[in-house]
Amino acid sequence: MKSQLIDLMNELQSISFFNANERCIIGCSTSEIQGSKIGSNGSLEIARTLYETLETIHNETGVHFAFQGCEHINRAITIERECFNPDTMTEVSVVPQASAGGSLSTYAYQHMKDPVVIEHIQCDKGIDIGQTLIGMHMKHVAVPVSVETKCIGEAIVTIAKSRPKLIGGARAKY
Image (tube, helix red, strand yellow):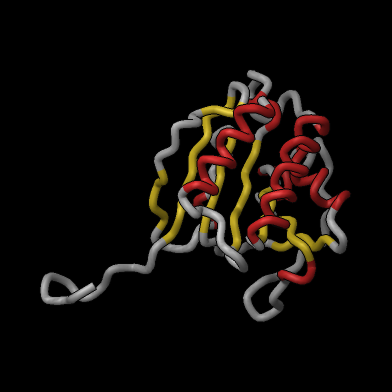
């Protein structure tokens, strides 16, 4: 699992996927990574490996990661408070737990400097490990990014980036 994760991160860095001050939503099922049904067999140990790898990417590139919780907390997002914008984000009162929030969101909350959980976010990029449905937290228009690394453990990996909407019809210039 760790080698697949490192391969994916290297591949994404090689295509300049991570950019300073952009937000990247991370949806993850540690159960799916282990080959179990989503939400049935979470692992804080797997979450630790994921979080530490993503923290390294953050330190190297300046990208800000947002961690999507599971459906039991309505897919609320854990971020560092320094990334919180009260004009566009609503803080919610919940502390992610492995059984209600997901292992990665829980681990992130426990290891961030000053975590805050918010109801909704619009991210520039996204990494979905285990089909957790991150689309609701992506800016419009989300565009799939093809990668060679298709799985982390047993979990399917889906990568997305966003682009501005094309408006104006046939006579418009882009």
